[in-house]
Length: 514
Ligand code: F6P
Image (cartoon, rainbow, N blue to C red):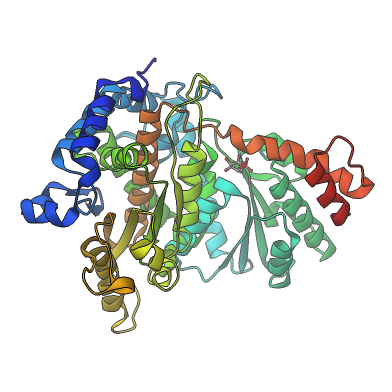
């Protein structure tokens, strides 16, 4: 499928004209006073959540032109190609079918699709296993060893759904090859009470393999013998897991990208934490968002609206980052999770043909939970020289029991979004706030497996939309390879001290580190 490059479309030129005539000078306060229905026009529901986009630097004409851009870039055809199972990850020659991991079986439970059949066979087996672990009082600690997509998603979701974790098991996540991390976890656990989940799509990632080897050595040194009971591999490379000595395995497929894999066997920690029913609800929430993305008209399609806003901000207003502010302490790994999702997917400088792009792509994503961020970097968001769009996330119904806290939390998130937009003039010098600083407000009724599933799928599809407009392959990650190759070359030099062929700085540092 050949799609027109975004900057060569008539819509791109029309957006440049709109930017020059009105877009560069948009003032949110004026837009609200001119249009009493702005909130309604720029807010909407989507499965299991509500989104207010009205405090963004956009007007109906610009948004209309962004929809034209999406159509001219073939975003709908591209989306349909993904859901059809076409090979849209062209640089790796793979289909992109993580949506299938959350597709239910058709009524009657029979499907002709061998992939969907395999998904449900694995899911059923994995959930039976998860329930077995939950019921096993001999296992008190579960240690997930994985990195990137084999860590960030499950870790984020397990923390987020803490209120639904009913097992009383302690969940640990070890990712870093820095031995301090594994050592600290090992100090807190006992071999006979521990289940290690070795999570790696490829089962070759050096950090995970190193941590897994050390965990196995520690287990055996501590008298452990029953590897089948205490080690389980989550991988698409079952042969490598067997070679490692692990016989209990749950597989997945090459059409599941690492950062899209928490719906697969990689989600086992989530299933152990919240149970099989909770995990099925998590999948159902994401599936509902898939349905919305597939069928809602672009004009009311939330992932499309968000993805196009990202394009507008990056390519026309020139914003370089987006701050993510979840006002829920259990969502503390949300920014880290989104960093991989967006920056590993869309942090690319060439198109699918390998041609260099003359426009910018993924913004930098960063953030911390509210209200903590307010007492750290919000100063810069309000009064710094850069404009950074903020994406707030708030939850209406608290699961906490302490009186007064939730109202304060909600008052703060509303106040921050309001202050960014309204600002404060004429207070004098340091006390002035320019205002007109954009934000998006995502609102969940409650943080549940279902709403979290929908929220994550929303973000996956929004990244798809901007990547699709930019014409890049959002599903490869060649940019992580060079560092891996060079680390392999450097490691033996740390022993030998050989600096031949190295640049001056690397050689100098290596001499100091030897
Ligand atoms: O190095 C990047 C990466 O390939 C990510 O895309 C992936 O999520 C992570 O490494 C872990 O890979 P694996 O699951 O194969 O160990």
